[in-house]
Length: 194
Image 1 (cartoon, rainbow, N blue to C red):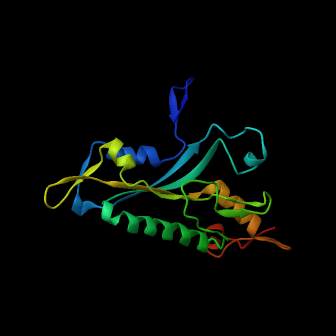
Image 2: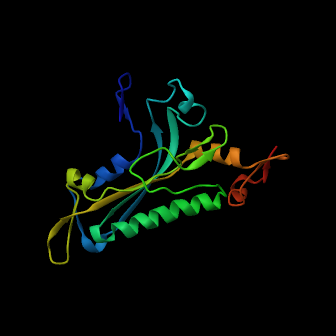
Image 3: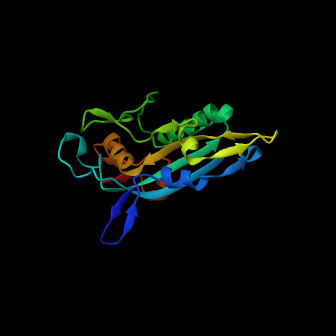
């Protein structure tokens, strides 16, 4: 988080940390797992505005909107939860008719292909932190046998909106204008941007 000294306010880079911290020092009942959270937030980054080829246009911004998914789950179910979250994000990209690729990795900036930048850019990431965050949070659950166990935490940025806008603009250009994906037409009220 970033401190704004003039206003004595704090800005967050993602909703993952504050949403996950709702469960700090909490003992959940096993029957209540998985806990599913969704947050739409304004996110802030300091590195935006620096100079270089990797920070042009909508790629890196000081402020952007993002939808974040956070789950708290049992260890034996967290792989399934991870797959469900990944399927959800993949479904969004399919509905937006965007080309994408899914990579299993420990880090990286990869997802939609930017013709302008000639490289893949990340629009979402879905992560299973196992007990790493839960251990620091003391986020636990009580089994049916009354045993206390550490939860697994998962998070995923459903969509980083500025990069999705860039992907939509780049991938839907036609001689007539920019085609709006069918899934968005009811919300836009038009099919083309002239």
